[in-house]
Image 1: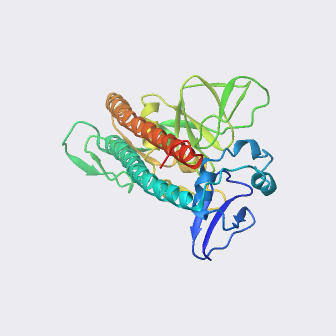
Image 2 (image 1 turned 90 degrees about the vertical axis):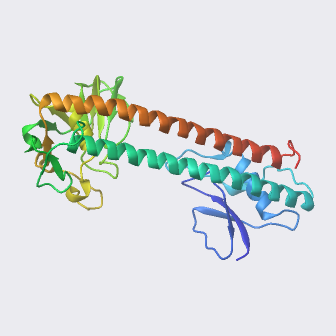
Image 3 (image 1 turned 30 degrees about the vertical axis):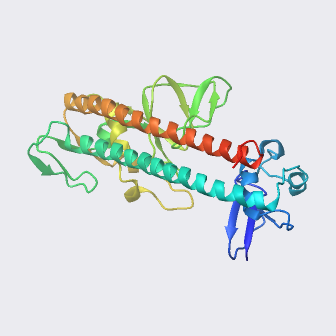
Length: 316
């Protein structure tokens, strides 16, 4: 109990914690105790400004050795000045954290808006008010009266991925992630990559050009009179919870995807929806990018503020 500073021993490193009250630390954390020359909260701010990189061993699980950290030299002002610095940084960081929290919340709201815009467009169209009918599919709901509903197997072909055998410069993709390595084999896009297994299998990707996919992702091609970009936007809206097998590693099968019912407007209207969503999503992505840039700038400023104050480069 009391006040404590902790930092990671292995795993997630470089993110110290300041805790007041009772606590218990497992063996992936170091627990620091202090002499009466150092305030715990001041030390916490010092560790926030500390350059951890030279002390992290990049083994299978990144780790740091406590003896190397405590052997480092830290500037220690008088206790009275430490207290003033803590008060100054508490106030300054609280103001920055408030702005950061609001900005991050705004980013999440924009992401929700983007998804709502996509789902509305692919299931209701973009032509304004029109006669509707029940699709008979829960996640789709009502669709325009002139649309139909069809199983995906009549609209697309879905192919398994595999491990590459040669080295090269072709990007390799898995479930719900950016390319994570390169190889020599390739398939020709465009394609939509959809997850087969993994925690991020619900995140599809639209890929153009040459690519390769491993077995955690399926690749999708469109059949005649069906728009592949339209399928991509549909895939962001699928109700995966209804299909995913809740095993140790969540999974989807080829049959799951093939037997999904899809809303089916005419091909010209599919293209109309895609053009609308390309423009609308680019607009929302631009707003998200600005907010994310603000977050990076605020985090950088906060880090430099802490560094300058705990090292005496800025008076308080």
